[in-house]
Structure formats: C-alpha cells, structure tokens
Image (cartoon, rainbow, N blue to C red; front, top):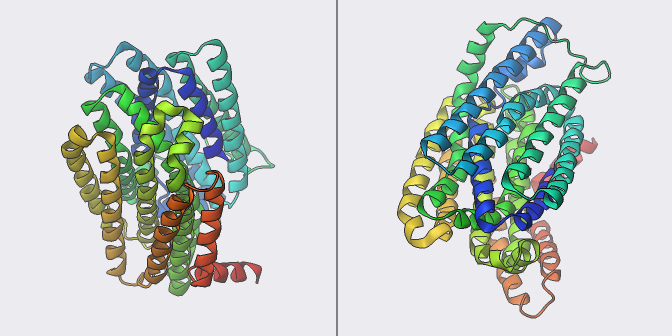
Length: 460
C-alpha cells in the first residue's frame, strides 16, 4: 500500500514539474536513499536477542541505546548528503532541495529503529498502519503543493512531513500502555553502542553495499548525462522500487523466523530459507510477466508519452529486482546463522563491478546501458551469495534451485507469449492473462510446493 500510494504521489510530482526539475528531484532523493542505507544498522542478531529478553531492564536499555545511536547516525547522514552536493558544486536549487529533503534521513533513521522494537514483539501490523497513514499524509500534501505551489522546494516537503508523522506515531505506540508499553530510561548505555557496532557493522556494510549497487547507477547517469536523463531513468526505476519494497518488507518476518530457528532447528531453518526464495521469486516472476509486455503503454498512461523512451530500462530494472531479492534472502540466511563477515566482500565486488561497468557503458548507451548492467551485477551477486551459503556448514540445502530454474523457464515463456498477445488483445488484459498463466504453470509443475507446506504448517 505504501508503494502504491508513493507511486501515485510520484505521478503527481512528475506531471507538476518540468523534466529537468523532476530530474533534480530524483537525484536528491536517490542520494538520500543511498545514505539511509548507510545510516541504518539493520537488524543485528544481538539487538533482536536482547529485545526479546525476559529481563525488562535489558529490553529498555537496549531499546534506548539502539534508537539513540540510530538518531545520531541520521544526523551524520544528513551532513554527508549536504556536503556531497556542495562538494559537487551543484546548482543552488539542488543544494537547497537537499538541505530540506535531507531532514527525511534525520527522522527516518530513528523511526526505522523503532520498527525493530515492534518487530521483536511481532507487532508489525501497527507499523504497517502507521506507514500507510504517513503515506496518505504525504500524497495529500503533494497534491496540495502541485495545485498551489508546483515548485521543487515545496514538493520535497511532503516527504519530510510524512517521516515526522510516522516517527511520532511509532514513538507514541512504543511508549503507550496499549502499545509496546516501553519506558525509555533517560541515560544511554554507550557500552552497548560498541556491542551493536561490532555485531551489526558487517551486516550494515553488506546491506549498504548491496543497495548502493542497486542505486549507484543513478549518480553515474547524472554525472554522464543531464537531469532530464536522470528524470527518465527515475521513472523507469519506479516499477523496480515497488518490487524492492516488497522484498524489504518480506525480510522483516523472514529474518525473525530464521533467527528463531538457528541453531536449534536446522531443518526448519533451511525450510524457511527455501520458502522465502520461492515466495519472492514467484512475486518477481509475476511482476515481470505482467509488466514486460506492456511497459510502453504503462509508462505513457502514468507519466505521459514523453517518458515512453524509458520503457526498455524499466523492463530491465524489473528483471534486476529478482536478483536483488535473491541477494537479500541469502544475506538474511547468512546473518541469521551468524556468518556476518561472509558477505560484505561479495557486496563490495558487486558494487565495484556495477560502478566500473556503468562508467564504461553509460556514456555510450545511456541509462539503458545502466539498466542492463544492473541485471548482470544483481545476478552475479546473487550467485556469489548463494555459493557462500552452499559452502557454509549447517545452512546447506537452503536454496530451491530446481524450483527457481523451473520458474525462470515459465516466466520466459509467459513473457514471450504476452509480448505477442499484446498486439492482438486490449493491453490492460495482457497482465491479467500472463499472471494467471504463470501461477497455473507454477502450481502444475510443483514450484509452489514449499509455500503450500508453509500454509499447512500455519494451519496446524
């Protein structure tokens, strides 16, 4: 719901701004998106274990130290973003927009820390409701800004307003008796900061490098092209962003289940891993089958015919999201098994190859080349991550290779059929037909067997 509402807001912003202004808008939030990753410690096993401790004092001390550390990292991230655009000698509008929109990092970073507290209590329903409410506030504010003050500096404010609303609601829910009922002490245990950093830093570096690999091409496109190019490429990214958000959302319960199963229940641990891979692979396959044949028409309908040129890049980025999803599941498996130091180097290799290839390809092929590089780098990184998983003691048999290969073959066939079908059938019907065919084929071939097993377990 957050992704769909955010999408609606993006459509309004695109139509309210000129292509160059939309490019500036996209560049600013693309930069901030990268920094949010580096200022987010992730869900360290030590944090989750301490938050589910039976001792209330341990829980309170952990919660306070974790939230305050993340708040400090948010301020650091804001200063880094502002320093980056100033160092690049960016246009005055870009610097002012970054100074304003950068407050998103300041508020979002401790807000994400509060989400971990809810995660430890399996109370993510409240977080979801708060996020949706905040997104509604943002969309309403965007519409008002587009009607009365359609300029860059005003249209970045709704994102800041949303984060303030979400942070306030999460804090109130965490401290109220009807919510988590936490009482935050006034003192911060600085020794816990060292514990968190020692445990979570490798994980944070790994996640940060992975998301940098996914988003760094936007900065390369800006450096090699124009803000119009950035705007078109950002429109192409919106469809992949929805898939990425689904993946990140799925990681929250999956990580908790994996941590709970390790090391006492290795079979359950492997089963949860396989179920996560199958679930996310199926979602990505459905997205590809639905979107790839009709990308041109969808971009023209939502953003205007001038953005139709980004259709091929959008197709490639949706495919790249599948690789990203497999990478994140693999990282969650390694992290839950305590293998934090096994994947940062893999992420570093993926990021290095991605940026290096972008620097070579983008000047000649533009953002289509950047999207193609994203497909290759995400696939390579996924292969490396799961190779490490396969070589790790106790976490083997965690990847359903046969199911994923079968699903990939089905997806290629359905996408090919949809591409032909769109010439003869009303295009909005093609995604429905494609998804129905893909799901039916997945059921008949037994691809979804892992998920049906999970359903039976839940019912019992």
